Every structure is written in structure tokens, then in C-alpha cells.
Image 1: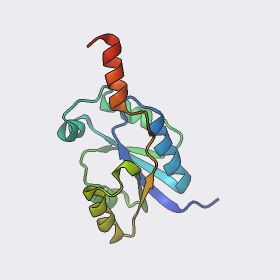
Image 2: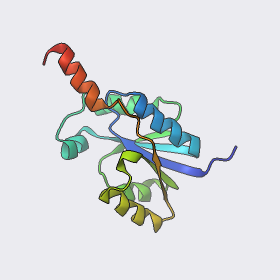
Image 3: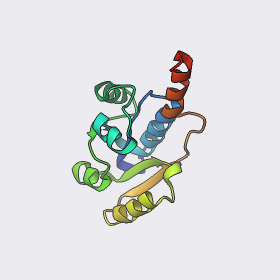
Image 4: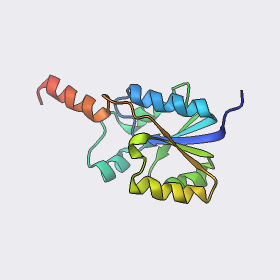
Length: 143
């Protein structure tokens, strides 16, 4: 069966890997022959979230690389998705629909349109997030 896209791309921190992460990777792979996943480095996460992931980068990228839906995991050192496109030449970028309509992604849609790259939004998996898992773990251990 031919898929809609040849090469797809998505990114994330993938800290405390959970079903929401798996859902986006599975849905992305359903639409592309080859899926590249950018895994945010610890330094990048600190830069834009001002926190350190629970799971170190080397372990997070190893986990993502081992998932059957992922053809290649790469370090995400920057949030510049156009630079990622210029490096990896994908046909589609996949992202959660919680970003749809935001200034950032409307601008990216416009930029990607020039390159013929589709932005595909997937339903956000409600009731689970790495932030929620971290807060729950902290509560359990009494911190």
C-alpha cells in the first residue's frame, strides 16, 4: 500500500515515554513510508521549557529509535523546523492539534507551503503528559 507521504518528520522531548507519544508516532508512520523523529536535546529543553528532562537525552533517543514506527531518530538541537527540512527533506511534518492555530504554527505552515511540505495535525491525547506524570511521581515520593 502506498502511503500519502514519502518522508515524514515529527519532534518531541519524549520524556517519560507514554501513550500520547506512541499515538503520534504510530499515526505519523501510517501516513509516510519513512519517519524521521527529532528528539529534543537536554540543552534545547532547558532553553525553551526551563527544566531538565527526567530521562537523559541519550536514553530518550535510544527509546525513540527502538520504536517500530520510527525509521530514524535525530537530535533536535534547535526549534527551527525549516532548518530541519533543509537537512532531512521531508514531505510532511506531524504535530499535535494542540498547536493548530497558534501563531508559531501558522507561520510554519506558511513557510512550509513554499517547500511543498504539508503540516498534518493529529488529535492530542488527553489526560496524559510527561508534565502530569512528573507531578504525579513527585507527589508519590513526597517532594
